[in-house]
Amino acid sequence: MDSHKVGLTDGITAIAGGGTHSLALKNDGTVWAWGYNGYGQLGNGGTYTTSNVPVQASGLTGGITAIMGGHHHSLALKNDGTVWAWGYNYYGQLGNGTNTNSNVPVRVSGLAGITKIAGGGLHSLALKNDGTVWAWGYNYYGQLGNGIYSASNVPVRVSMN
Image (cartoon, rainbow, N blue to C red):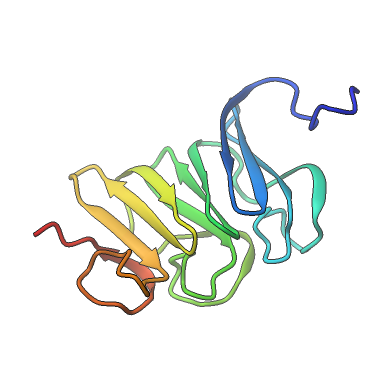
């Protein structure tokens, strides 16, 4: 293998960069990640070891249609409209109702019918098929768009007044 290749030689349909890690989506719907893993943002479970070669995210065995990276967290959109997240969660950016980091993907609470996702530095966003926008995580600057400045560890609807 050429020492300049990352190990994923074909079948890549999407790529994303986080603050300290990288992600790739293969045409079989699997997610691969590499880079810093101090908070579990590679999602390969059971380890927080940094990797300079791609490792497969655990539990996402296909059906992933989009990936996004946040500063120290990762997001995936499944073909059933659910969102999955893993990594740093101090401000609730995994959206699963906790503030505990996860080195395996966890389902974002209460979201279905999602068509697009985005990862911010310390927050996350999702666009629902009804045109509503949902956000969760850090909110010191109002980036959740819900009219308050408190972090949320579950998705809140962005107010479009």
